[in-house]
Image (cartoon, rainbow, N blue to C red; front, side):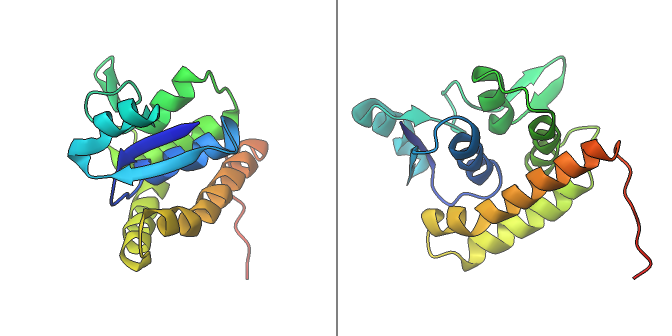
Length: 155
């Protein structure tokens, strides 16, 4: 499957490729193009557009609550992994302004902005950030196993 979004990705446009590769299609190809070219590229290349105005897999509002493209992919592909749903809350907190924002969202946004600054292009940005999403996913699994309680060490 081919996927396309706007270039100069930060949070959601890197989180979505991570989500797709880990839970939808491990062989997915991603393209990053200027904002005004996404929908034409999608049509011409038979690619799935995401996180761009006018496409299905975009931010949406439900019951006065904003969800991000990461959520739209989870909904479309009926992903139900509890740790993934927890990770979605962090991604949403980094890319939108939910009333129930998770504190980890601020750190994710800061890291994403930093990665965008040091990456030579969006593909390198994905390569650099995917381990961060792997770690956050593992953190969410661990938090759920611990009943949401953090253990503090004395070291």
